[in-house]
Image (cartoon, rainbow, N blue to C red):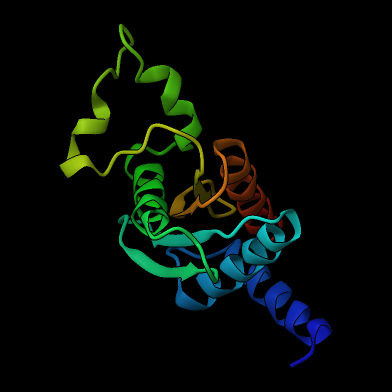
Length: 156
């Protein structure tokens, strides 16, 4: 399949996302592929994780030579975004010393991530149907890649 055909398939699947009630493997594959391409463009060797509305993994893709640690981090960013219904980048301020969620990263068997790279994914009705977690670059790169994934998802 050439690049143009692959892009057409990804676009078709992404259009289906807007009405979904839970993340499917086809949606996760299309979303991860779009984010992987963007990561390649900016020179990041990322791990992309997509979870369903229950925070369970649907897909994890590891780019060649990505960090081993990024696997768990990406999964946990996706989990955190579903579990707390917010982007992980919002947690850094809420989880700092003296803040209302201070120490939250030590709950849920340590699965809560308090830095950027996770985004909840909502259908057209605004209901969370899954999340994306990206790890492998700097916090700002991971945050931008996850936001890109959310943007692609919302185009559907």
